[in-house]
Length: 196
Image (cartoon, rainbow, N blue to C red; front, side):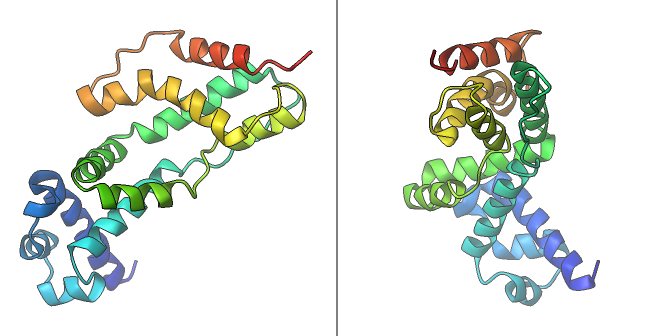
């Protein structure tokens, strides 16, 4: 990694810590530069202001949440098993400690600033969830009834995040018991069973 890339990475990590501790309004560019062990001039070469830093961190958060590759439908395996496996992998990605930290920092700022929140969700809407492809292909194969795959994915993830993301995000704990993921998938499959 080049020295400029290392400095940029250090600046972003320092900004995440500063925003987490001070919030966006309380964050200070000079403290971020000091944390990153760079001059303020170097920081400004990479990012023109706090807003640019926050946008970069938001982009990184979206990319981390989308880090899992899209999952395809396998005709030879039961759909419920495929969904459970894909969802377990997805939950693993979004509940990694670094991902939770980024989510907490970004969401705290989005709650404070409605315009920034709107811009973030416009950007977020351009990314597909990794299991959208699986659901779309299962619909094409006739295993699920035809519907909007993105909408169906959001319904399923709403169930799953209730039990696996939000407790981790809000409480630092995951009280979900065995069988919860399977229950979420069973409810989803019951609603999207193919038309007869």
